[in-house]
Image 1 (cartoon, rainbow, N blue to C red):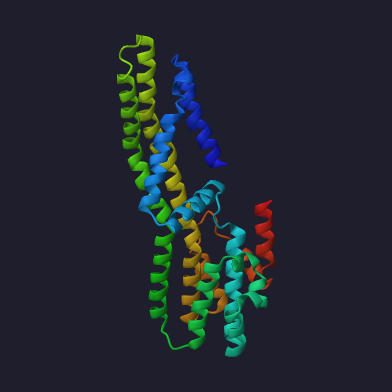
Image 2 (cartoon, rainbow, N blue to C red; image 1 turned 120 degrees about the vertical axis):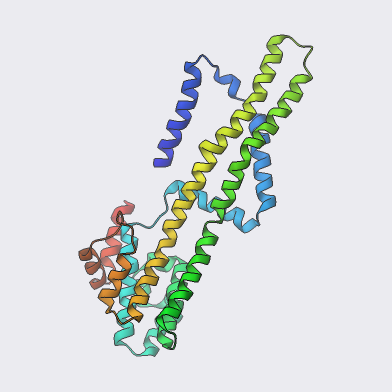
Length: 296
């Protein structure tokens, strides 16, 4: 909703102000200028980046526009899952816990939290480090360093669309000049025409400069920043897992370890201690109920 409101305000102010100054909107409508700028931008983007990143950029843009970030109910589900796994680690023999880790899709614990199980990367992250805890030979600070390295790698991969889109946004004003120069070349070929025709051609050429600057600073740069914010929030769940499991490895009870993870959540989305306690004791039903309410 915020993205839609922002675009309406920006575009409305642009065209509204232009009309208020006595401008004619028909002059701005130069579709081939936009084709030149947009086509060059897309083409160079494909040349500069592997196809998986190009595809991920489209996915990241959709996530940013929809605001696909973890909500309170998803945090509760994650803490509930971690609590259930840590309780199993404390009370059950190794072979029983390994069954949940080796085949999470068949695990009763993971199936109580379908939202987490749907995130394949997060599920693998949890299972990998719970498996290391089961083995029992690694020291907590070694596991923590390994987690931080993997989180940094994951974050770097997730933010590639942001960095590549920022590069394109910085190039768009220059691409607008390219379109404008082509328009001027066209106008130079009509020097024998009337001033009215020549003025129309020059005005159309200048639209290219306007379009490149506008698309750069009013559309692509804000979109890149939105992608960065969205992807960083998505990566935050890995930090919550790290804080929780490291606290558990250092001897904290599951209830206390979950509190370490809760403190890693942004204050705006952080559930209360009572909500976390209800979610962990109820085995995830509380978190699922909150997630359904937020979705509605």
